[in-house]
Length: 77
Image (cartoon, rainbow, N blue to C red):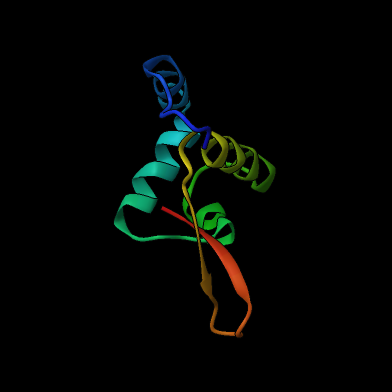
């Protein structure tokens, strides 16, 4: 996220996107990895990753946690 909070136009632009809304709905219930989001949202893997990157840049939506395999993975909230 930039030093300043995102402006209303940026947030409104994100929310216009059906995939972004789906991601935000799913991650409001629990943090999810991109892989899990792909299984729960009606979008292709590349589309999910592009939207997540946009959310990460604009809203700082990432947290890192250790997976069951002992590796760190990015979860989105």
